[in-house]
Structures are given as C-alpha cells and as structure tokens.
Image (cartoon, rainbow, N blue to C red):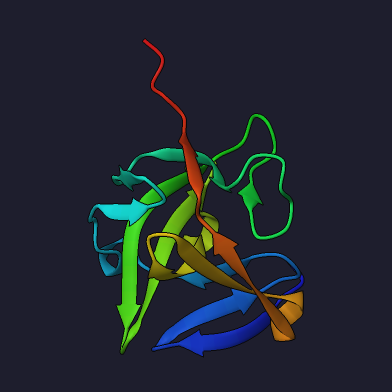
Amino acid sequence: MKARAHNFGEKEFFITKEANFIRLEPSDIKEELLHIADRVIAPGDRITLIGKEGRKARTVKIKEGSFLEYRGVYSSADLVLAIFAVNGSSPENLYESFYYLEHKRLFILTNYGQSGTDIQANEINILEETQ
C-alpha cells in the first residue's frame, strides 16, 4: 500500500490517496454505538454508503460486493476516529478510519496528506442480515 505514515496518539496512522488507515490492537477499539446521518450504527454493522447516492464528492461509496464493517471508535486527546474493517477483516491490525466530527460530518485526509475531504453524512446504507 502506498501511503504516507504519521502518528495518531501513539498509533501508526496511514494516509493513502483516498483513505485513512490506523494500526490498532482490537483492545484499543471502544465498541460503542455511533450516530451517523439519521441512524445509529453498532459494532458489526456493514456499511456500503455514507453520504448521498449518486454524489461522488463528499461521499464514501463502497464498490458492489464490498462493505466496511463498523468496529467502534478510537480516541486520542480531543479527536475521535470511527473504525471500520474492510470487508470484515483487518490484516496486520490495519483498520480504515474516518475522523468523526459530528453525526452529519466525517473527515478524511487525502492525496497522501496534502488535502482532505469532509464527508457529508446525509445518508447511510447498512447491509441487512440475510437469513
């Protein structure tokens, strides 16, 4: 993975062209509910969209057949990260992360740390469990 590395608290934080990752031990993640858009998500929820369908800018749309599994939050000082496992897995304890600003606004650093994008969380799509 091509990325620029930083520290978030005492943890390794990686910025790629379009995403942020953090290396955490599972015990570092606080499993708690999180309010995003008009929903409250719980650890284990599988997300396919945060933003607004059809709007590429300021939206996180996961390609078909993939998802982000919400795991919880990680906090350092006055910052909070929403933590997700890509397709439910976290190889080498790397998790995709979003700065949680408030329930309608998330943020990611982009372009290897040269810019950033605020995600307008107007909608969130959660995959429903199949029986």
